[in-house]
Length: 81
Image (cartoon, rainbow, N blue to C red; front, side, top):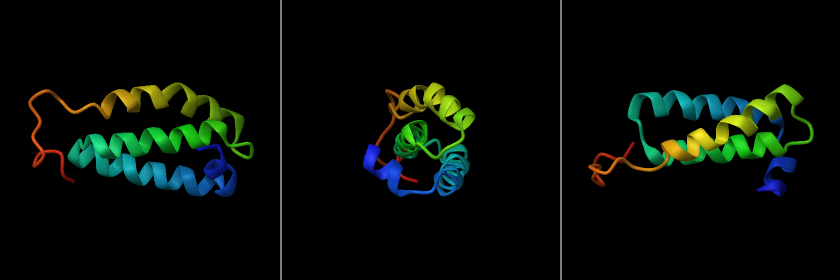
């Protein structure tokens, strides 16, 4: 994860995260939430990211990890985005 964060520009990671968050709001797909969490982890560890972005992403990635847990009544068809 750390190597990925170092090889990407932080503004591209922010843009991709916002894109994923928009699609998550439409679908509620736990897989998208996991991708968002991973992007936030990358941003939190990114040396070139603004310290405020790193702090926010560090604080929020756990909430997105929690959103990645499918609801108990979810089926494979409801998890597809």
